[in-house]
Structure formats: C-alpha cells, structure tokens
Image (cartoon, rainbow, N blue to C red):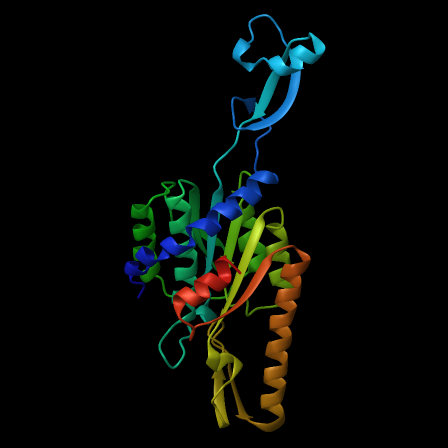
Length: 286
C-alpha cells in the first residue's frame, strides 16, 4: 500500500523541478501564438491601433522607425506520469517492497512537485493499453485520489509498450516531460517502439527491479512461473543455466539503457531495496 505521507518529505527537490521546467521552456515548450507573454519573439512595424506600450523606443531612437515587440505566449509545463501495471510489476522482494509500489511512488512524487510549482500533471497506468487516472486538476487532492486508485490496482496481464505508449502519445498536446516507470521486462524491440513514440518529449525512464531478480537466491529444482502469461517452466537452476540467466538479464538492462540514450531519454536503474528518497533523488536529479 502507498502511504501518502511520503509526499510531505519532497520539498527538498523543488529546485530541480525549476531547472527541468526552464530547460523545456528554452526548447520547444513555447507556443507559436504571439501575445503579451514573457519570451521575446520578434519585431514588426507599428500599425495604427497597436498598443503603444509595446513600441521599442530604444530601437526608434536608432532607426526613427516604430517597431512593436512581439512575445511568445508561454505555456505551463505539463508532466505526464506513466506507470506500468503489467503482471511482472507485482513482484515483491524479501523486504516486501514491491516494484509497482516503488514505480508508483516515483511517479506520484514527480506529480506532487509539479503541482507545487503550479504546473500541470497527468497520471496514467499502462499494460496492454493506457488508462488515465486523473481528471485534469493538478493539485494535491488529485494526487491523493490517484493514490487511492493505485492502491486498488493489482498488476496483471502483459505489457504492450508499442500499443500503450503510442496510444498515449496521441493525447499529448505539446512538448512535455514524460516519466515512464516500469521494469521494462518485455521484448526490447517493443520497448524501443513504445519509447520512440514519445521521443519528441523529455523522457525519464526509471527501470525498477527487485534485487532477487538480478541475484536469485533460488537453487536446484525450480518451477518458474511467468506472472504475465501464467506459463510454467521446470528446470534445475544453477551452474550454466544460472549464468545464462544473469547474462541475459544484464544484457537486457543494457539494451533498454542504450535505447533510452539513443532517444535522448534519461535511464535510471532502480532497486526496490534502496531507500525511497535516495531512489527519487537518483531518478529526478541524476
């Protein structure tokens, strides 16, 4: 269960949100609509009826021509939080810290800081498709409502990054910050296709794994069950098979990281055994 009390400890990260917002606004966050915004865009010649307060008098002193200053209308930063609810996210380590809970808290923490800076957030879950959780209000009450919904969510089924993230991308109206919190334990081509659909945005991709997944304590005759399909495999886990498992998992983690870097996304490997605020700092500040 996600306890909302953790939100009150996030004040120390406010400055880092300001930096991210500034980076986006200096990129493509500005609107092409011109008005009395904060970012200078261009000059045009004065026409009768224009607001004389917009005349650049210094430029007039040099040219003896009247020019109007035009500004880009700035939009609020919008942050999109996407939390994986596929079956593999339901795994919990020996300390009962689940991957889904960790991923959800990372996303909720980002949403909280976004609201504190009077910016907008959207929260959704995804598996085979995406499901929007928020109702469009970017405030603490909306985060608490999302916590209630997430506490009622049981990770299940298979993830389709291509379908779910491509579908969600169509709902994004302008360049935004998008956080995709997942274990990314599915076909790497599917992961690449899904993240590529979001590549026009500033992407942050925390990959959440339990330590038991990277370093299994299982040994000997074992039945492995796929949490997403229910498929079972009986094998002797040890020796060459254990080494192959470790090698393939580490290779997959590296591949996901490579995909992220090629897309200009930030990839962080997160362990459920780490203290939450250390993890949040790693993901958010880097």
